[in-house]
Length: 433
Ligand code: MTE
Ligand code: CO
Image (cartoon, rainbow, N blue to C red; front, top):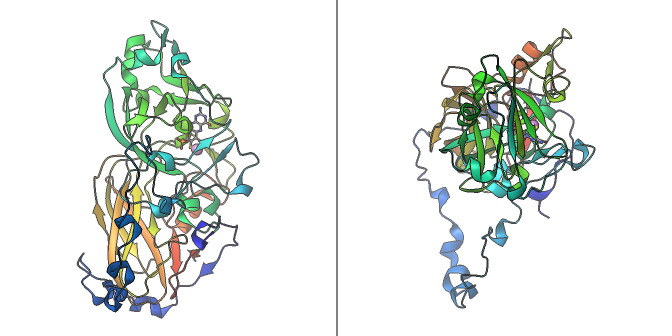
């Protein structure tokens, strides 16, 4: 097991001052292309046997086309997996694992790497035996089979799903050493599904119908109230992710997609939609997924996931392997309010900011990929990223967040993350005071 595979241990919150003059010595490259001599590997010049000798893979036949009817990653990528933090939850069925953000690029999460959060284990459902009921304040109560659902017009949309508890362990200080653990309760895939409004229209929502209860078919029977306005806006009843059937972990055969809103509402293994005239005040919207403020009052119905970003590389699980010279700083940004308009990166703990380059599709309520290409002089860095969305909302510092919400919160931490890059290229989770 290499360093990069060691599960994170709890760590007391380091706090680093801003007085490191050395940080300012690390220069920024303004252009994208890094044409420094530092990019050329010197082993090639010294008669590298990997070049001068014919290798086995260049000499012998490889596997036949049917060796892997369902393909999987190279054996050299075996370390790129979802990981959990053992001490975090009491049982592995009501638990969570984390997306390995530090190993990914672009904006799409591969299906096998999407973090999982379930409260009663993974339901294994034969789609032929699955039913979706619509009842309550409707003209016609309906029950759909999966085949019925596939006869409605469908749409393809790319959305992130972030658990409201993502970064929750970081609320009071730096805790887990890696963006997989601090920010990995998020994934972003392309969903194929039927707009929820088509199903509700088929049933005929009565004028008194202002709320929708979504219920799962798993052992936890996850249930959440959703305002009718959102249900009729952009929600999907989805059966495909990244082109193939949903994975059982993600709600096979069908899940609710609630774009931009907290992951808990995206009910998996969706079995029932009830129309009502008020919220149901379920456990997950009263004792859970509410934010207890300093004055003892709790914020509730905090559905939208606020603008947020994190640098995925370098980061504690993705140290700099190459010493000084050209360095690609990369990360992801997202907002439940729409698209990301700008991401700024600081290498000196938030004193100075440089606007990063957003590359790839910029889609509403989807992940965005950003890069900043610098010429690293080998001195320590305090790396931060700060996202701004299309409405002008800016990601706050953790101190700003705590000033507004106090210290009791777990959910909805969208504060700026700091990574301390050391001269040897190793990286640690810290907080800038
Ligand atoms: N739906 C059901 N039926 N049961 C669950 O336990 N967990 C919720 C939500 N939907 C849950 C559920 C939570 S808290 C989150 S964050 C998302 O599913 C996680 O979705 P994922 O497992 O696809 O990442
Ligand atoms: Co969640």
